[in-house]
Image 1 (cartoon, rainbow, N blue to C red):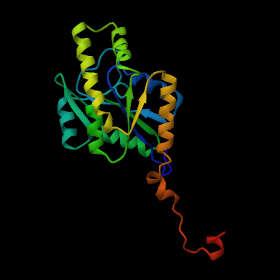
Image 2 (image 1 turned 180 degrees about the vertical axis):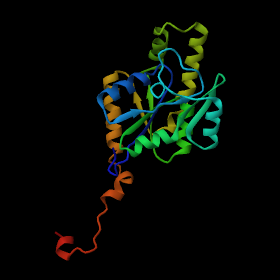
Image 3 (image 1 turned 60 degrees about the vertical axis):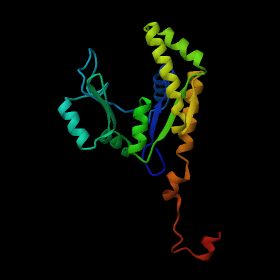
Image 4 (image 1 turned 30 degrees about the horizontal axis):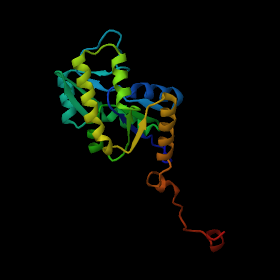
Amino acid sequence: MTVDGRGLLIVISGPSGAGKGTICKSFMDRNKNVELSVSATTRNPRNGEVEGINYHFMSKKQFKEKIKANDFLEYAEVYDNYYGTPKSNVEEILESGKDVILEIDIQGALKVKENTEEGVFIFILPPSMEELKQRIISRGSETQESLMKRFNSAYKEINYISKYNYAVVNDKVETAVEKLEAIISAEKCRVDRIKDSILYSKEGMTNEQLYD
């Protein structure tokens, strides 16, 4: 929570295999005053998925109505389905004083940056491109063709790092989480975030009080 009682919007992204999800989970385990934003989607729920926990499930008609109402911080169409971050849900959490994490892809993060004046944008990096390659290989779910596609995509995505406020190298999860905590702590002390709460009125004060 910032000094004015409002939560902080934390946008985290980076190339596939950098460990964004692992870092976010560990961070949330250690910090209870934070919530992960739940995305909206038009795809059908998979086995075990729960409305409001995994996604907000809705029809394409409902989704398009929300687009017209400007109720998304960002959205995209992927394989004939829509995915998006509901603006109203994020705003409700921030107003309650809790921080919100958006773990989204780079294009989504850039759209969020266009649509809001607040937010801390953090880019997660692997220790090296070779390490990134090994992490993707270790998943055991990639063909040679898809591996190269992901790897080439990662090279392109890293070029967007200048659009972010901070970069965190994920060499060790615990260290990366500590850096994330330090960034957020520093952000909550920034003068432009807290100046309205620390300006004191001089009206009605005596000279002795002013110079005491």
